[in-house]
Amino acid sequence: MDSLITILVSIHEYCRPGLGFLSREELYQTILNHACELMKTDQGSLMIYNPARKELNIVASQGLPREV
Image (cartoon, rainbow, N blue to C red; front, side):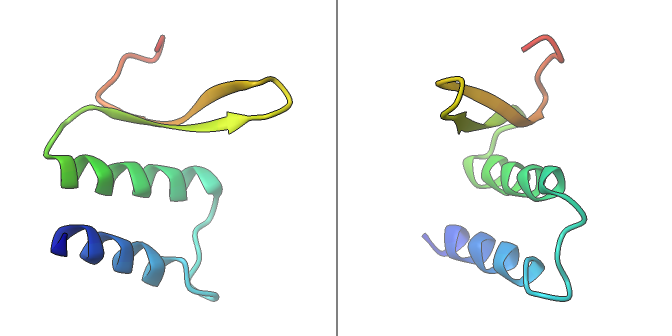
């Protein structure tokens, strides 16, 4: 639980106004990197639901082939 709180605080600090991300992609990749660290894995993906297409889209990945 302490690891999760530490990760959430670091993401929050990085997202403060004036210190923000350059893009959503950078935010998504940072969230995924922290999630993989927390889960102690080298592979993972972050998916966002697209309601218009009614599907999940991979917005960040780590350790997965591009085709996925």
